[in-house]
Length: 326
Image 1 (tube, rainbow, N blue to C red):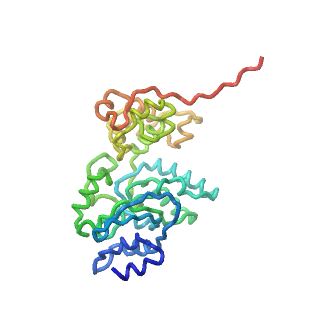
Image 2 (cartoon, rainbow, N blue to C red):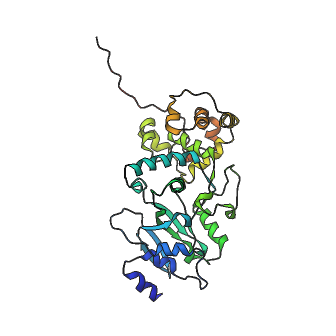
Image 3 (cartoon, rainbow, N blue to C red):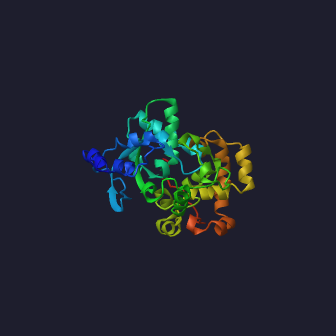
């Protein structure tokens, strides 16, 4: 341990220290993770969320900016909404073309935990990281290294082979979503091993569109606060934010009419605003029905205010009309 302290003292890379503490004698399952973490450097004034880890029973505060290869990140959900991924990809490509820092849009970068066998699990921003993966498949205009911050270190808290206790803790703290893209319960062993293995759940994309249009209310969404009204919004936004879009996706997928529209589509005009925004005809066909369904009595009973369900009228942003010349 003293050698580790000496090695890392030059640049105060406490994160590297956390990763190699109590390292198994037979080496790491994911050696490249350690190699990447040894490159970590603290960066001042980044506003990164502070994570607290317990090393040798002593609390340690970590505020380092670290980067991990995208290939070494393990998902904590089975699927993403690929249409949402595609839209994020288009945004990122625009930023890259304008030479903008894409990470300035991401509050606190990408949260991760370290689990058994030194594996690193991503607990949020799966859609963003998947969009970066797809950009990497087309070009080299973006780094394969993902800025992360650690929110928990299970490696030192548990036996490093104790998968059951690890996943029990992950479930208890809302860090994993154990359902597939059909809404069916799965085991942790069925989760994809890499970001590239994430499957498409079209209903997750549709749920995100419903959220964008204030069909259910996620706290902090300023556009919906403006449309609903500040007082009503703050009273009704979701108090249970964990995997909110997935929970609504599972509710929406039970509606037969929505399923039919998702399968068969409908006729939409070329200048349809939904198509301009979301670039998917079948999702846009299903959106009006989904908006009605999430405002229904059934949604009120089954989902409730804790998940942001509401029945307020959604006001469109008003634009001032030009007066006719007289």
